[in-house]
Length: 101
Image (cartoon, rainbow, N blue to C red):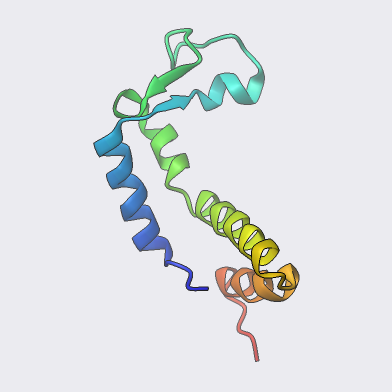
């Protein structure tokens, strides 16, 4: 399985957010279990183009990229019946900057 690099993934996600303008759940309300906040005008969600920059930065963060790749690898390993830890291990080590010998 080929894993797309972080920069290419980030470019694709940013382009999708701009072109599709999806509804995004407000992370401030969601994380604190509030019914609404000033960020989302008490609606609990907003469109991507109206989202605050810090929300968009969170969607494009390296952590989000790593979580998405790991979820994709888990699905792929279940489908191909490969050992998940053997497949995900090198990705995690490379993303942390640890070189595999």
